[in-house]
Image: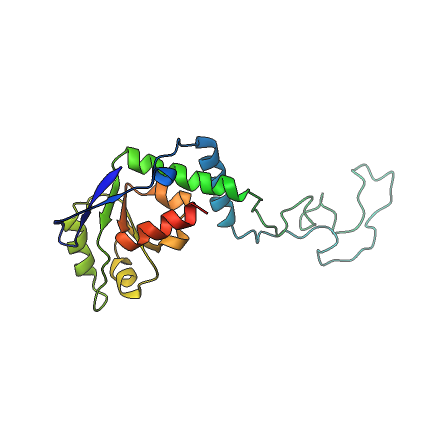
Length: 209
């Protein structure tokens, strides 16, 4: 699949790039996408929820009443879970919500997400660019020139670029990331994928290992 390379003014440079079929032309695997997105979301969870159990609650361990004959349920000390202010039974504990996912499955998921974007003609390739200084107005102008200013956009750069990142930081529907950090969730979450020409090579190299 060939895509025209545009400049930041939205003009066709006359050059075309070929999207590698091994990455952008695979048969999408929905289950692999599901697993990779689930892993991404699981890794976003802090996992710091914590409730005190019976042994952790502050209070005397003296048995409050006799075992039988009181007319109520059996209970021991004031930390008993059946009493107000007592410990919690099977409460949440700090944990890691992540799980193991094979590398080949993750690669397939990313390829599948990119393949969906290619099928939807939602990939724009632009010449490598940067800004002399961070300026939101400059980023807005670039997006208008590329005709993606009304869509949720993921801009993928060959590497970290502070000026471009800061220029897009205040734009609600625009996200900037380096090609090495590209993941399935971010690709699918965007309406259109804007790839810098240099980033395209990085993406294809990373996914064709």
